[in-house]
Length: 204
Image 1 (tube, rainbow, N blue to C red):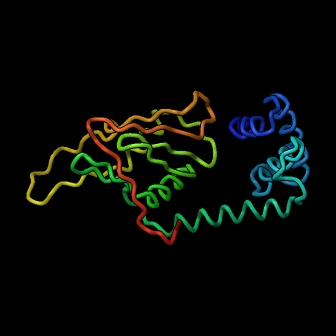
Image 2: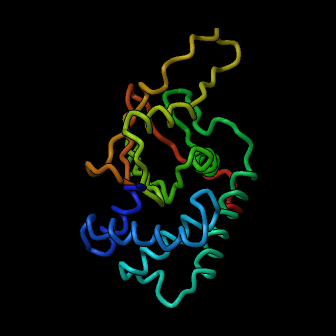
Image 3: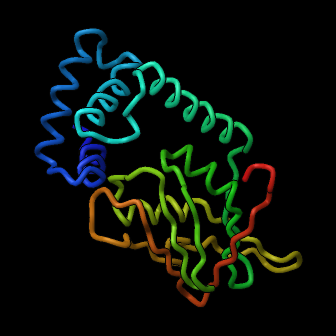
């Protein structure tokens, strides 16, 4: 049972999780009459029917074919974004600056299943990161994922140092204590400051 999706629909329609879960189970039964769970249209159909039963506007006036076409376009666009960037670190640590290459970071997170909706820098030590979809990943898991993006740059002529634990450079907290949270606050630590840049304006 995909709890995040059920919770999201419940929040957006102001209905109880229990009620949406009943819609979800009914939708599964309907979808199972035509497809197996392993077949591509199955889960989009379940989501589509659940949203329609819950009265969500995005499903109104649409056929399932139109809804599925939209979902496939989103999936195709995500694939194009990923294909446009090689796998490379997206955060550079140098001179007490954590330089985040926003487009590369978003592409790398997409590979990990996180769709970055926006990154807002509040000040030199605080970032607000919003996901387009909720995630059940815990704060430590998100932190380790972000830390895996950091690479240390050492000036030429300086002796190479031991690679530090980059997860100690910042902290990650959900804006609200919710398993389906989409908004996170990232705080820099150890006197590091954030700088966010867009390296390919054509992809904005």
